[in-house]
Length: 208
Image 1 (cartoon, helix red, strand yellow):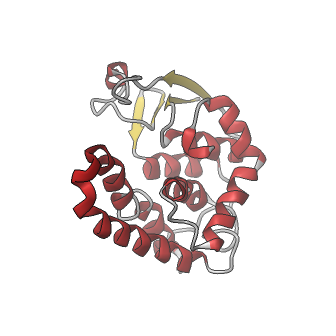
Image 2: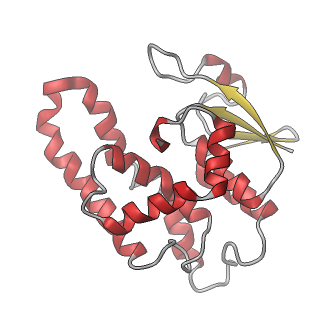
Image 3: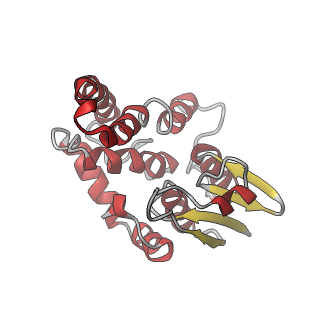
């Protein structure tokens, strides 16, 4: 059985959501952020030296990184057609967006998060940061278009991966000019599996 080392208010929430969508068996091992620093507890480093979440363990094997974890879960539990085969024409587009979610798309959102602690000193950076956020959110809006989901217009692991990007963008009011993404996030958060994952995962401010 998959053990999800789950940190509150973190990316591991989308791993719980994916598991619930696929009705895969799993066990949650909970960790709480430090109330003063908001960092993960040192105990998480006993699972992996980075001490980051999400991280899963299966029969002594440890996997980190959301895209790698999601790929493992999909390979093990998803029905045929949930993800493309390597020989499919759209395979590499799918792979590109799986990694884009935690690569280029999240970088300016993280810069906004960290620079916000600088107060007025961060003001010179804000124009460039929001320009980059709008660039990437605009790209995702183009990728989605008039569809309901990002891959073949069917729910897939891309939706769970990109949900965190949309939730982070919503906090900075960066979704308001992209109604297709706002509607997509509303659809995600209305899904029974999303709600069930919230019940099991506990506090999740990004999802509220």
